[in-house]
Image (cartoon, rainbow, N blue to C red; front, top):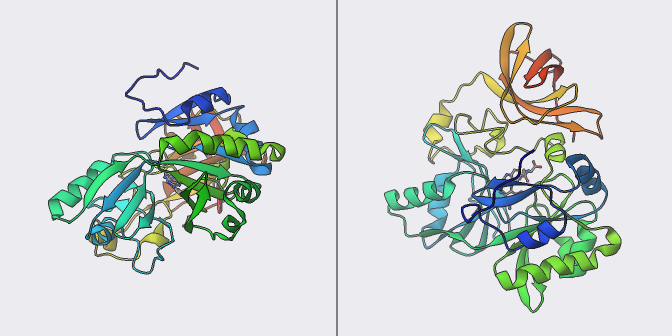
Length: 359
Ligand code: THG
């Protein structure tokens, strides 16, 4: 494999030097920023994530700040998820759609303070969309990319590590809630969120001066927990059915097609009318396949006999489940249990459509 060429166009994070030193072996680019993708290898990284605790540089989850008296109104205009009942300390996974109901992003949104939203982006161009919507609609808001860099703590020992660094109170934080916790004479926003099914937290670091002290405190206090630098893990997230924007969905897919139906709750928003009239013959589904599984860097056709019934959009080999795990988009007429073949760059692989993801 060839290396990623570094330049100013691909932004570093406050932890890039530390991530390099910790043995990162592959980066990907996400929101024009470096996002670690592998350390000891996806399998080894996944096994460690499932038994211990990792610290992830997820600064590439950029925060678009919407601030001003119309911030709530604009935010509700941007998503079909009903935000009216959200608690001030609650985070929300929010589909954002275009006028056709196509997915533009699937961020986590939260309010760090009244009249202010942070939209924690998946990879895409959403900041320009929000700025455009704010401008076109004449909303009383300012929209900009805040220099907030999230650092995640993920894995079954996350609570123990977080408690050692932020105090015992952090254990009481519920799933998708956030709060302010003391660190080094300042306060940090910590949420119980993150891109894995192993549990954990995300810390929204607002000042570069706090970034390395936090990293070092986590590494130091987690030594006996076998803490390691890690990153969003391809195998673990597919096993858990966590979607990746740009891979498993694009602006050509609606929230209904990618299984995000439960977040479509209001229709008085951008894309609402299209979503109301929505009918589709496709759905996202888990696919179990034989190995070896090459990198899924193109959409692999799924064939049932001679009929093309869909595509695989993400795939990896799972050591835990001893099979290839994949996410596909298929014609609704084919049910789970259907035997298919997946055409990879290394040739066809036997596969079967699955009722559920692995976790
Ligand atoms: N955390 C934060 N920002 C992010 C991500 C994150 N931005 C980019 C990317 N990840 C956005 N995508 C997702 C996808 C899934 C989830 C969060 C962000 C997620 N899903 C839960 C699950 O599948 O179990 C369900 C969440 C819910 O139902 O409310 O957590 O990880 N800050």
